[in-house]
Image (cartoon, rainbow over all chains, first blue to last red; front, side, top):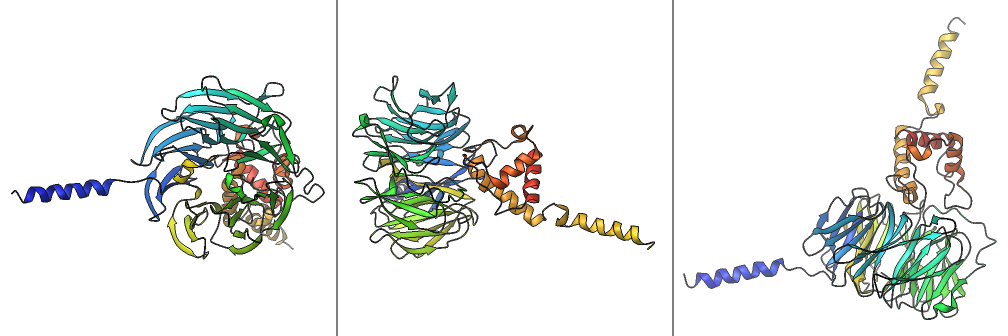
Amino acid sequence: MTKLLPLLALLFSFNAIAELRATGDLGVVIEREDGNALIINTTEHKCLAKIEKLGDLSHASVVFSRDQRYAYVFGRDGGLTKIDMLKDVVDKRIIQAGNSIGGAISQDGKLIAVSNYTPGGVKVFSADTLELVADIPSNYGDGLRSKVVGLVDAPGQRFVFSLFDAGEIWMADFKNPKAPIIKKFPNIGKQPYDALMSPDGHYYIAGLFGEPGLALLDLWNTDAGVKHILPDYGKDDEKLPVYKMPHLEGWAVAGDYVFAPAIGQHKVLVIDKNTWELHDTIAVAGQPVFVMARPDARQVWVNFAFPDNNQLQVIDVKDLSISKTLSPGKGVLHMEFTPRGEQVWVALRDDNQLVVYDTETLQEITRLPANKPNGIFFSSRAHKIGL
Amino acid sequence: MKKLPLLILVITAVLAKTSLAGEPSPERQRALRNMLNHDCGACHGLTLKGGLGPALLPEALAGKPDDLLVSTILNGREGTAMPPWQPFMNQDEAAWLVGILRKP
């Protein structure tokens, strides 16, 4: 008996160790039609759990808590869900608006901001309890409220966002959450459709749908206002129809360049980050939706809008050429690099699969099943400014 | 020639059953529904409750004439984010889509 007890203790301790889980290599994959979020592990290429009943996730975005334990899912229908990735459960869930497009987490990790289409504006919540902390209606003109897009966190406990209908950029300082200070930049250009924060938190750049070019806010020099860059780009060219809006994220910035989708053209713009002038354009297979640099900035991967959404292209940043065109399947909606970029996960909506590629060899490593997957978000975003 | 009325009847019946009558084939209907959910849905929402584009639910479309809706689908709306879908569907198919939007 005395020999059995230590053995049993040892066995129990193994069991306890086996139950521990770390979250640094986890991620969330959205199943857009079913309204589910899958929790996946990027080291093991496994799906660990399915979190169901998250409402309308036909468009969804995710940010992660500072401790990488929680994923905050922003749903199309205004749903905001805090998922516990250690316990595979919903920790808290609220419906905070009628129609919503995305959100951000503050510099200190204590606030969650959501950008809403209806009613137009930004709402800010406690990251811990999801209690409402502030409500900022996106008022403009004569009693109108604009759709809000391109919401990101910025250093100095700020959020920066754009007003699609109003053509404005607003910056909200939340050092005192109960009394945010809003600075408005009007007339920044027509119909900003999305925006990115450079990974160093220095520049906020909004893409414009209604006119050529982009709007640039230098966060080190906000008194200088918003600058219109590439104002004449392609203005005399025939504009091709845009079947899906491009999305801008911080990894548009790679080395000395910003790689941006050209609106109405089958091109990626290469903008010099020092002069803000056009350095080059790269002809690509369709209207770019996501233009994403690998974490080391040596490659930029591009996916495309309907009807060219069965392809992916890889740009070699060294000489700005197309290294390869990949055809993984149908409905290439989104991609996400592993934290140090050795692999990339790609969502194939119409093939109901995720594909994982080796980014060096460009070979497929594995496929996982997922129902109509769209967004893929890894927990490494928790420590990235602007994500 | 006594059989002519019968012949006309048969031909009309056959035409009514084919796509010449306007209704897309079942396979094409599936493809159009998929386009509606996912490609139109990219801006109008999978549930058609709206997004960057307005809601396309029956109450949102009430009072708007069919021609206007069909034309908007095929030609887009200048100055807005609505693109022309005519490379991907014909007039009859756009009309069919308007029909299922009005009566889901």
